Image (cartoon, rainbow, N blue to C red; front, top):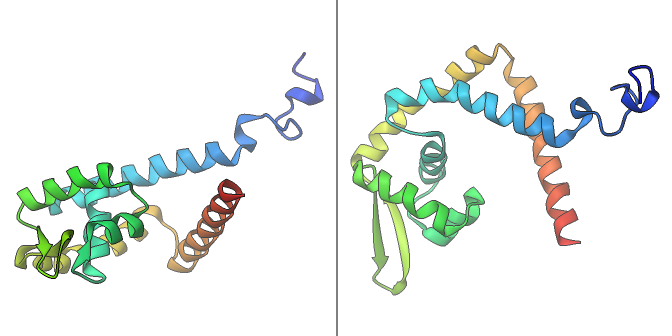
Length: 156
């Protein structure tokens, strides 16, 4: 094949790297997470820990199972995040008195206090990306559609 062969023309080659949805998603995720890193560092959070805190700020207590489902993380991945957040004094894990099999996660006073500082994260990210909120919301909605389609494809 030569450079003028239609199979090697990125505009028409179905295997061209830059035409792959998976490639764009991976690069976008990695790049956007790198924008979050310096914004979250002053809060003492990694991005995965930030996601846990967002879920808990949205409604706690949450069982580990419910938190795992909300974050779409398997429990073995979630457990070290919770241990680190607990060690940092932001969350507590306790067995529910009414069901000792259920481990519930609650925020500590420090975890709730961190929410006030975290309110500055979204505007900082919007400013760093240089995109307006409506554009980012459309992107999020489009990605949610892709996720839903992928889940359906996996199930089917």
